[in-house]
Image (cartoon, rainbow, N blue to C red; front, side, top):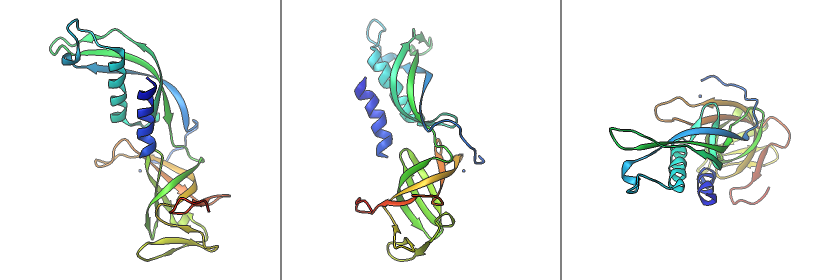
Length: 211
């Protein structure tokens, strides 16, 4: 079970409806219920299946589901509380098991301080990735005392020569969160970032060294 939990967590760590405020902490645990389908071909001769197989199917389902607009991103299953009795779908022979479990969630919140890696630099701002969140936009208007320098490797240069460029880690404040509703992007949050605050800005260079 420990290995299965880590598979889900490692998967997410390796990798605009109107803006709204969120009162919950970004990381929290919640009890959830899911119906886990087991195909008839995966049942043994006695029509039984192991709990480990059911949990594996649960994790596969969460990886596909990825995120929920109200709850956030599914990070890790931290405990299985109950696997109920399976119900057979008569026309197919497949079995659905109700599973109650605890799950660690990540819900982006306005006002939080986070760090992200610069993925793309544009004259209008910078796109970053932060944990499971693929879409973080830091507008040039939210980068006081930085100016855009065009070139083969474009960069935002601060008056004190601090640089924001591709692969740099930037500490920022979240000032907007949006659930994406587009055909090409689904089940994703977008965050808007700002450097208007204390101790915000680049924290490592593109080589990973602390600044």
